[in-house]
Image (cartoon, rainbow, N blue to C red; front, side, top):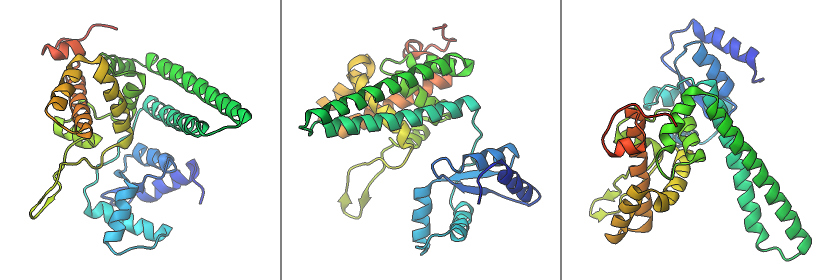
Length: 294
């Protein structure tokens, strides 16, 4: 079946006259994007379903086979039983930002893979080819970064959010853009909610006499990756988070526990800054005045 505007229009026309509680769409790498936009534009109650959770649900229901009709029934059962947040339409600028970041991640992953493979090369010609490929990828990434800056500067709402986020030392272009594109709820949640949504909230892992360590689970992996990189930088450039990390290390906490704790503190503080519309210095001093221009 085609996946174009004509098909989406037929889908909307077919569903519009029905009494529908929710419509479920499985995230499939972007193929669902057009249908999602059409359904949301028609004000139909639409939910985006996590593929991993959907597959676990199917297995728990004893459904091991896959097929379009079978998958549709599983999705319908999933949204009828499991708590699923309704999808929200995103501004075009946010959509473009998310797309740019996705391509940047792909290029960076390719660059890292080539650099790692090049360490084992002995042939001079192959080493030269690897250096050329890495240089080209680095140039493409740099071009994308410049374009990200232009996108932010030409959109008033993005520029204002970017100003708030990057006022925190160690939060640069990529972490700030990632938070804007992939965590638009930032500033509207409690500290526990934002930690859980990012995937840095500790959960108990205990049963009977077994007392395990707390662990993190779920959340938005892309946001967590960007936040982790910012955390590494914060250890050098953010005096508050640097001191917090030192206290944890001095207390004998494991390295991974320290990193996650700093990530959780960072996203909590960023959430408060966006919520109160204050830049880093004002946030630290408890002031809630409107930030000055950057």
